[in-house]
Image (cartoon, rainbow, N blue to C red; front, side, top):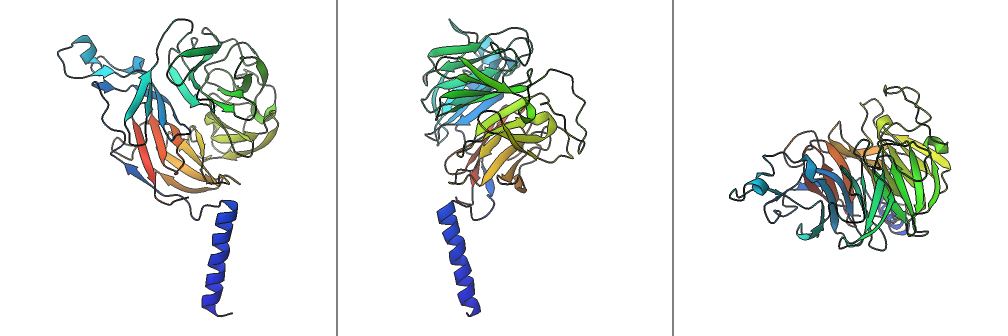
Length: 364
């Protein structure tokens, strides 16, 4: 066959594989969108961003920490004549254009609002879940309707009670709900060393596990030292949790620069290490690429100020974006990620106190 014919045949095979198996044609590339979000209304200002999530409508949800605003940042509340600034409500929903759709949250009757907000998730039934990670204070997750009406609290506030207490949590960092079973999976957390699962409707305890699917312990672990043999337990924090379309549970062990993968029942499958030679923190959150096969994982890396694109099959890093800094496209304490159906990435910063969007330039 002539060379041109071979080239066309090969291109046809690539296109066929891409269409039939949902394979992304090339590693994703991104560009910061400095126009997103729009200017906040009402002279609002954001504190540290404790969580971010993109729902099924491609709306972006954040929970921020009003308690982290300085007196200068919220001086409009104390001095009404000042034209800036007042704290935004803790929970904000944005549309794709970056407009505020609604906002709500904070202490109320019948529940214990977290002392330090951490993690937000919108489930398949449009319930909004929120956690918190304040030391010796936050041992609960909260469930609200989409418009902010309180539904349920699982756990309770107070001092830590340990990684095998099935009635309380330990500074829970993140959560997901399995639409197939309506079970709530919690990355638990900044205090405890486990994944714990509840019935999302009743709050009934189902099961829990630690690293490698073993029973968790609260023993003190040595400091992370690069390529050393990793401990058999999670190191705080157990920072993220996500479930792939093929039913595997991905858990961020941020203190050990690794992601562990489990079956839904807690059976250990495998782990990926991300920049193991780096200081701890290269696995802050995991998002799956929105093609059919979820070909890639996108992982946040706080100490290096980047997010990384990894092949989901083997954890190989294929690209990275960002750097430490204060300008658009840079990060000051990159915390969590969101991803929409078009592959655009949304980033939440703690010290930077902002949200950014990075447009996917590569298609799906």
